[in-house]
Image 1 (cartoon, rainbow, N blue to C red):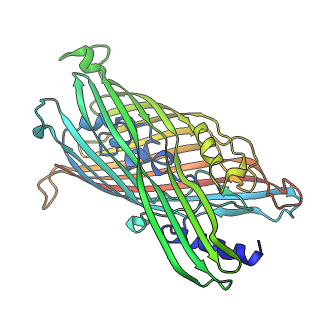
Image 2 (tube, rainbow, N blue to C red; image 1 turned 180 degrees about the vertical axis):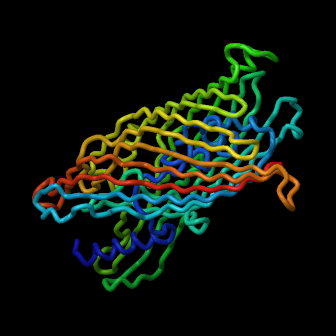
Image 3 (spheres, one colour; image 1 turned 90 degrees about the vertical axis):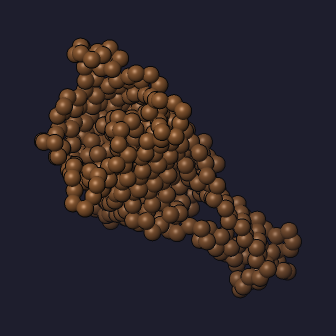
Length: 445
């Protein structure tokens, strides 16, 4: 096949892709997993997320939705800035990079959430709650976007934006002291098909295009044990103030499939040439989280341990036509988190947290793809202010603020390419920082 023909077909495939995808920085973007959702999750490094009574519980532990019996309407914003730096250590390419930034594209999320008590519409006396959480990129302007590519310079593995986040579910009290909840995490499987006739100049006619985005639903299950209610009754005992939570989140991915077919009269006859591209953009591994917290009237401390099963991503990437040659392998990792919260008075409380995250990416070489990922130290700090009788409103109003800093520890990688005369052609050291700023406003009702 001639080079001109291949270029024409590539343009056809690219046109199909561009109709439903706006460019975004590549990587397995996942807002909630990498940073947290609401400011309390961000500030506690997700250590207290299993015990967060706000609407983000629908993602982390839907069983905790009833901890605060009030309904709520929440709006929030989040700005994530990642600075990943690369220093060349030598190779067949001249080592000219001495700290070059390769990824500083921000993620800017608008978050909306609602939680409400549905007990009155059921025939059961036990509390029943429903909640929904929605996140949209570029402060609400970008709902569907992705980029999946190879890179000669290298690219961030866990960076990237998550254009659309949707989570909904509910909970009920199973028995006194035991709450259970179920929710769904919804991702999209996008498909586009293009059929066209074209000449060698790239002029098309008789085009036919179909585009669809189908939801893929993954379950989230949570359970909370309140040891005070289970053992202490109305009095004090050894279990007073202790709670334990268990959460299971199924793996989820955003996938895009493009089928393009073209006929070039005199060069490519009917049935034409078909190109098929299948790739995934964002991925959430299967997560099992176990946490416990001790609380008093003014203070609480919580510890959470997560197992993230990243090894499941290996099969997905073998079927990814963009990255299948990379030979990528992943470890299942354990992430410990610890967080504290202290009430200064009845209106103000402060939150802090720490987590240690190992990189799931095995090895230091991925042909053509050249993913970078680092072990991370995560530190969070935040505050919340609640007004019981705000002006003009009949219900309490709460403001939350959270900041998180992630230190990407130095790690060496070998860059390689299938068309390079020597492989690997460059060795680099990668480090960096991530800064997360989050704020929300919640109306309690």
